[in-house]
Length: 80
Image (tube, rainbow, N blue to C red):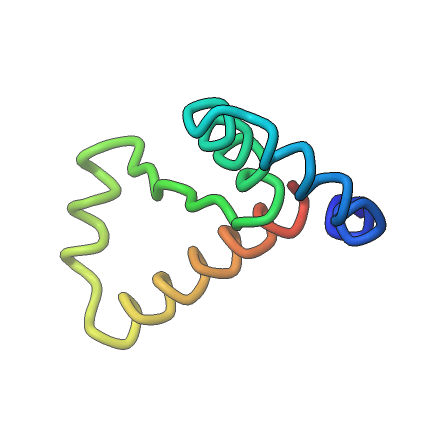
């Protein structure tokens, strides 16, 4: 949606950006980037118990858990 809006107004956007001071132009571009660049999510471990459980897993279990967590992160990114 945002990309389409930019595409339809690219010439006006270029003119507007050229008219701005370098500082203001950088500020606006950084704000716009958040709509175009995927955000990284931190993996949050809620307790030392979870760390201990990961360390106790065998290699295959640990890999399965990592893949499961990656899926959760991807689902979160698709929903934002």
